[in-house]
Length: 248
Image (cartoon, rainbow, N blue to C red; front, side, top):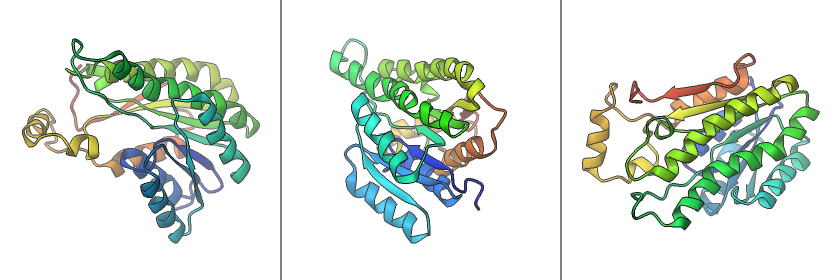
């Protein structure tokens, strides 16, 4: 279970949801992981203790990824503690759902800043350290919503679509440094964002998924682990994991 042995990874927004599952998956396969949170301190520390109890190396760093100075500190803390950086998973995100006519400017800006701007900030500060290590792996978490849109989520859809474009451009620029950049586009996964939806909304979503169920966080995490551990010749790609829900 050591395919990532000695690799150092940052997973943003990893105190809960998909980020938590990804951080756990990477750690259990040997990576030394920085667990990042913004407000969920208790959940981040709970994951830290869980991983340490299983013999994994991990630290917790609080940082708001919408703020470049905090991102710089997040990367620096990781490098100082572990000695370098090999893997970056840009997972942190928020949603502020509202129809276009009702969406405030602040709701637009917050989602773009947290979900899209943060991908640039984290990549910007991580890349020099990856070049020093002779290469690296960057994964950007997009969404099926970025591919097909969704009512009441223009801000979220724009940010997630932007992530795919950023991924393709960054992959072209960074290939010569042996740094791969890929995007993962989950469908509807059993996280707080989905399970908190009204029962009727969940039923309507399930009816649109050919496999008839929501995805599980660990299924997305396994795809991420494969891409950072085995995806040496995969870059600039966007991977759909949505139970067959290809409605574009």
